[in-house]
Amino acid sequence: MTHYKIIIIGAGMSGLSTGLAWQKVYGAHNDDVLIVENNATVGGCVTSFARKGYIFDTTQIIPDVANVLAFFDVNIPLLKFENYYARLFLTNPATKITKIIPVPSSVNDFQDFLTQRYPEDKEKIEKFFSYCLAMYAELNYLKTEPKWFHIPGILINCPKIIANSGKTYRQFLKKFRFKNPEVEQVLDIFSSFSGLSGDRCAALLTACAMVTTLKGSYRPAKGFIQFPIALKDKFLENGGTLMTRAEAVKILTERGKVSGIELADGSRFTADYVVSTADTKVTFSKLIGEKEFKKAGYVYYQKIKKVHMSPSGFAIQLGLDDDINLEKLGFNCGYNVLTSSAKAHERMFNEWEAGKTLMSFDCFHLAVICPSLMTGGKQTLIIHVVPVPANYWIKLKEEDNEKYVKEKNSFADFYINLVEMYMVPDLRKHIQFIDVSTPATYKRYIGSPTGSQYDMLPVPSNFGKNRLKTRTPIKGLFIPKFSHGIWPALQSGLQVVDMISGGKIMQGNSSL
Image (cartoon, rainbow, N blue to C red; front, side, top):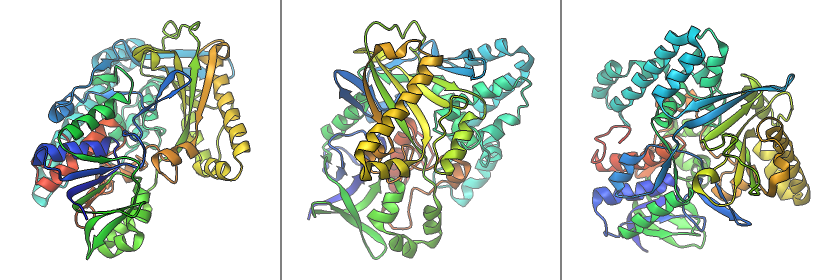
């Protein structure tokens, strides 16, 4: 039975980052790290796929990760969003009037834009940005596993983080008391990128994500598959072992300590450490089992049992002809969010909690992206809709595939109508190809029973000091779930190896 120092389940961003960080600390070419991946390709949720000559990306934006790539000695050509990072389409369904509000691609430019557009809130807007930048700077004083002697320093150096750790982003925005309600609605665009409404998303996540994305947002020059492939190539170059089409079905333990893994084909590998980047609930209920967690640590067991997973969604991928000029329509930015009201996204979540999908021409919230304007190739447009109840679509596909196909196409048709109505006139005339991803697609591809693209729900009770601890009570087992997104996923891998090595990467800090 082959023995490795560390085995990593999953070759997504967290898994690849963990493997590269291990090699950086313990030396390359030691042949002591194994990554197993269920799919044929690496990347997890960060990938690209081809259909009928069109290339579609599953991810849209990377914040500035230059320091992480430099640490790994990986070079990936990235294209920066220059003029506009995003645009918000504020729509009145009754009048069909839409305001298009751009989000410039820098903190200073965005602040200047807002103060010019809303002069009555100038001082409050300046205070908001000053506060967010200061709160972001406080991250440098956080520890991944704070000891008792770290607490005084954190209390002194992180007052803003502590004050807002239990708040939602909407609650955070309310404290600035903007006179014009539209200011709050524009700033709330950043919660959409976390797949939540501002009434639910953790304030720390959203505010700090805003700062990182406005400091610099990028796309790989040749599509998002380029990013994980570059990490994989460096990992293999360093002597790591990667197995694809290798499904981990069990994490082996012995007397409360991890001992290795078992694959679907029956093969077993032993290890001193196991890092599972699989869906959190899958690790809990399938790979380890509830009894094992309960026996190892009851408090952790209760925490992981109560963890809420993020919602699933739809991605409607459109291949377009060359006769439509999307650049002229302003789609050469990172995101375009179309919403009918300040409360539209929250209303969709209320329906989602009841197991329903809100589809109404009077209430809607969605994102539209055009990656081909930056990466080249045949023109594409992608429509993202979150949240969507997963159980209905997963069950429908399993029980009646013909009805499933019919209903998912009807769902796509509804949102194409909205985009054509408010964003891209005559869109239908230019559609050459449609591919629709549903919660059933995400269940199959990322192995999440709930089709949860963002893993754990990034609400205050699941985030920051309340998040599930990376180090589990089973000795040698780690579940790195810093947050979702490429930057947090890369940081989670660094955190794991930093913990194991006693701080040899970040000296116990939460980020590089």
